[in-house]
Image 1 (spheres, rainbow, N blue to C red):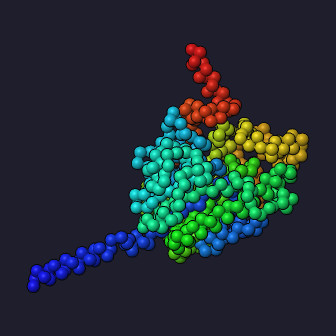
Image 2 (cartoon, rainbow, N blue to C red):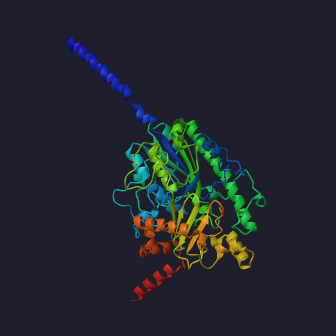
Image 3 (cartoon, one colour):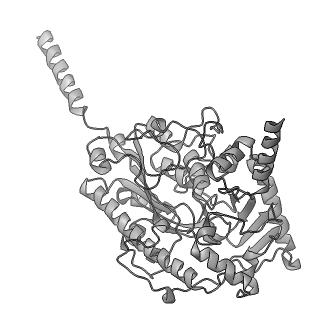
Length: 491
């Protein structure tokens, strides 16, 4: 009898064990999927953010069901520096990833500190499938197969939208039984209105005060609006894929852009046009978790913290070597100021830093002797040529002409409440010297405490890389490099 009872008990235990196999534990099932819809070159010209010029129903729906963030400030105004910062969870200037399109050749071996794992690697360690459809654009050497478990592909560095491996991501993930962390890259502002079913008249757009009213500038502005609509259609298709595969309910969708649109004075510069981006996060099954701190967040938020918030929603601890934070945490306290940085972009060598509070923007130009409009890739655009010619012909107001001047002020200060276009520089106004001293101290302390790598000259390997990419570089740094290395060859 005892033997029979023992055998019966073992069978029951065995049956109990098998009943648990093939289906996740409750804690596993509760873990959300995380999806970043990562958009290039776009400002917040969407209905959810108060701009109804073009319809954006899909983005608006995400915002109405999730959380809308009204003041998200990116760590840089260019893609590779932003992407490097968010994926590593630390400022690009701290890790030496600040110069645009670095570490693309073996002779410039920029690597992360030993033991520093990226955000997708942390997700993989916790059993998540990971993928990135499209562009990495990270300024460090890495093994893509370590970051992404699904269709990682052999190519690292700069990939445009959907030029990575193609696979039916939603169907594949629905059948995996595992949670996922994924990125889908959209061209956003780089669509420039192509294939838009909505046409925006250039005459109908309202240009900001810092632009001269020129035909091609108006046309570009209108095309940017059309690109916003095309992007919203892309978002709708992604959400439909999630819904059709039963993934939408438990997926936290982050919709955001890498920086402002490609217009002059937006992309590449530390004004809000280049740094202020839209961010919406929606997670139907976790709406109460998302909205713990409100359904609309108006406090300044670091774009750097998108990685920390994603880890936090998944219950993954943020490593001590990262400075990213979880803005969904119950005890989250907004930072009183946010630092952003601009360094060498393509073959344009410069260095700028900004401190942004809810009310003020302080900018320091370390290469004040150089113009804002140094030679750059946009010089070939008809819009840029028209803009330069109009300035030369004297068609700009004094405020519009500031951006085209031969030199920059060493410091800039703007009252963002009274002057959202950042046109009236208060840096030399006696009434604002106390504020200037406060913001100078913040920036100096931050540069010292983080050992801001932008204070050191770029390596010869980095300059060689610039010349490999852009043989047209005529900056003093490139000319000096060529002179020195020609001398070495002659010797």
